[in-house]
Image 1 (tube, rainbow, N blue to C red):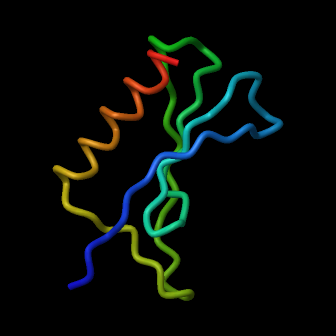
Image 2: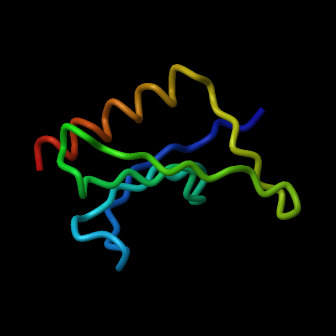
Length: 78
């Protein structure tokens, strides 16, 4: 099984006043975290698999938890 690559990317969608932080899995956005309600009230929007195009959003739970913690700390410390 190929190792999945989880990464963080800042983005600036027009629908949000503040920067958002995307979690990407193999360069596909799987989670977008916005901080418009403040860093103590972060919201996460989840995006799913696109099996028609060969993308399955499945990773080990420990890796997902680690990247979520990293995302929260990145936004709190920016």
